[in-house]
Image (cartoon, rainbow, N blue to C red; front, side, top):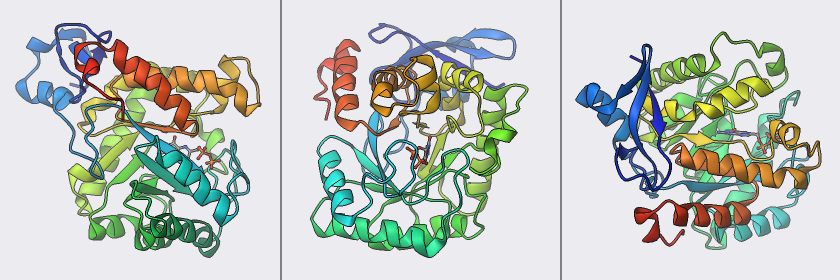
Length: 335
Ligand code: HH2
């Protein structure tokens, strides 16, 4: 049975922890035939939805973690060109390291319609920045956002700890063996086609079920390639070959991804659907309030990693959310 856990409001006394969360509990799951009480599920099904997820890069996942985005690209949709020099990129990394739990560094834009960046150029954009962050003693875990094994390898050698592959290891056949050999965590994101053509492929009968099935298949492929289950993170790929309606369906049903038994990453920050829904259009600063709303929605659905541009603002919003989340949250320092 495919299950959708229904999270209860923070502070609710009963229920079971959702995916090991200190803040979010669940007591019912939606199966094919409708809502089922937790007590009607098998012990294995309950455990899959409730069990704590393994630590990631030394971080416990019992609370939402903030992944700060650093795009060292000239053309990213929201911050392209802002961190194009080594100095600007390292300064932004140092600033975010104060409040983020991990950083995600990327050298190729994946915005709809983006063109592929040659491997050596992507390496030249990312590896020196990672090396310099480490040279300055900034110890925060770093993820490399790339679909190319050579870029991931150079980043790991420069001091990165994790790979974030928006193609879920489908683009480059050398990526899965690299991740397996290095024993590092990997984020498997749902996407269709490639950034150049993905919006033309935005067609699903049941987007939530199809994304979950795709991710389950990618987890299986990763394990078959020798990647340990404890090193796998999943991601519904908000905005990647999805319409506004698809994004909303995925966001409403986010908690269902916990049925995959792996931590879930959500990357919705500043994306177009937020501009559309909040009526703030293409102006990036106008997308901040909506980005915070979506981040808190993700937190309430037990999402473990929130990939965001606005780290300080997200940290402040999360502190309030954690305070409101009740007993467990009150002992939390928010760091
Ligand atoms: N979104 C973007 C890039 N990488 N990785 C994961 N795992 N999930 C996401 O949702 C995701 C991602 C696109 O956002 P951004 O990095 O800000 O823009 P660009 O790709 O234009 O650099």
